[in-house]
Image 1 (cartoon, helix red, strand yellow):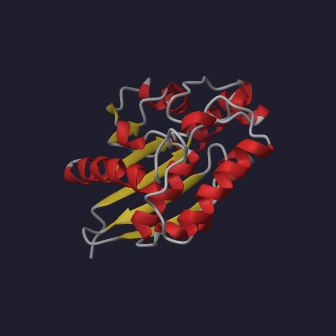
Image 2: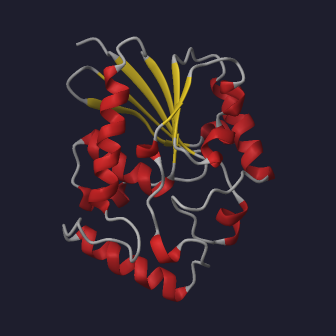
Image 3: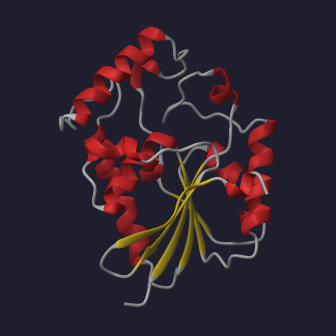
Length: 206
């Protein structure tokens, strides 16, 4: 069957919080740092010849800044809250030290056992994120005239979305690694998705 859509799904570029190991989730609206801006430039140079019909980002400016060079060309752009990062609750803005990570690993272990309803204290569960992502995904799939789509989002949220797109259980989310400005490219044939590029970083080093 002929592919109906192609999705280029990227994680945003680096921020100072990424570099310093500070937790940033849905409630922390940071800017790209110099490295992040360089990563965005390199991605643009590698993919500027792709005829994107639409750009989708989260509501957070680090995603907007990552694809700004494409937006500046006049490509249609829409922000979807369903693409926002996981709400890390009480951990947001905190150093990812031993206590913070212990709390996260406890929740992650429960997700790995299938307890997807367990939430980060004060934040979201895996099911919460998956539900709002499903609304965003259906919105993107419904736009039949958008054949080639660029999506910029966030690391943990990307792992959850990749489970949905590949038909994997949420317990398998850690099978989908991510770095700043990594790319997952997928085709959609009207029935399902096929991964064409898996956590591709070649554009950052060419």
